[in-house]
Length: 97
Image (cartoon, rainbow, N blue to C red; front, side):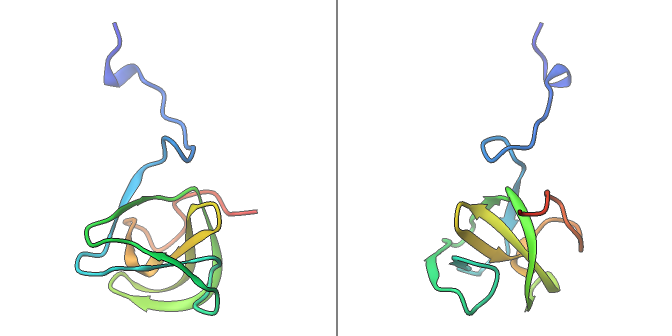
């Protein structure tokens, strides 16, 4: 019998936990972990993201505090962790290479 209790959880881009982006914000997605990198796109209001890895970058202040952690949400796409409700002030995903 296949129940939720018996399923194994793995952390990959396809199955990673999803985190809510701060309500009321259309967060810019950048090609690297700093506002100096070009904007790739903007997330829509009410977006959720899967974090594949995290790395240190520019310090950013947002609704969830001030941090230098940036979340990699897709290949070549980063957003500041200050705009993502992870429930932690630290890393919640592996560090990016």
